[in-house]
Length: 320
Image (cartoon, rainbow, N blue to C red; front, side, top):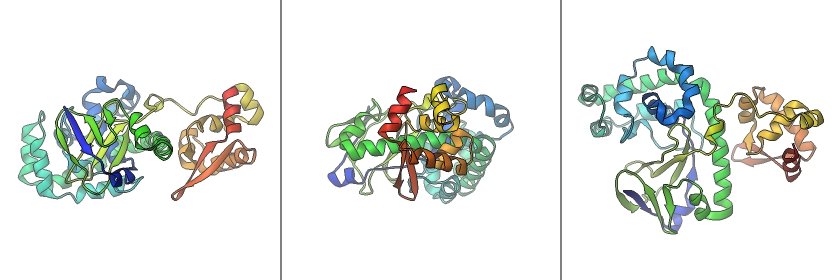
């Protein structure tokens, strides 16, 4: 069973990347229900289990079953490359109640009484769901988001380079084994069938840590979206920054050595600060020294500056 999208040249030209705190939050509801499916997230589960037990998540869990279709209005496709949670939550609050009721009625395998309550008054249901998402975010997810953010950011930077250097063929070849690019059609292995063209508004590619290792799609009336497994998810719950080998640390300092090793994938100052447990100001100072020494270089990407290692930095880190 597959989803098949025909991409015209203008569709390929309008491929864009984004990541979504709302998508990660909603996908984590499935992790709560099926811990064995994603044992890689057990450190997070252990950290939040006591808090989860004190929350009323019944309506969220009814709309987001352990598998199969989940109500799309809860996960609107990102409309900017890096949306923040409040902006995405506002979009959920503004969901069309009639459409939300239709989507809720399509969900299978959850508490039918809860679904019936939602569809009886979907406007009130949407408001309750948004409030529940806010509480769940505050209690169980917000403190972990910087770590997830950094992983997703690294993936988007890597894939963007792939697309720029090798085009759609190279990009889709490395996305996931369930995704096949024929040169004209994008064929995605999913448990239902759908064929057609995109809807004129491009294709959004969204990496996900909590939907990993599966892929997901969204189609009309939403913007066409493909959610794919983020690369490097095995490093997500590693404690602290990468180790700094003794010789490298002795040469350039422990913090700079850790930053240089972390720049195996390009990253922003804020992402490095979250990973290193240092202030952005301290990270900026260390990056200034590394850049001055020819070991790292910054490049502007939109409103942000992304740092990467130079060939000299690669050689030094490789020797370490």
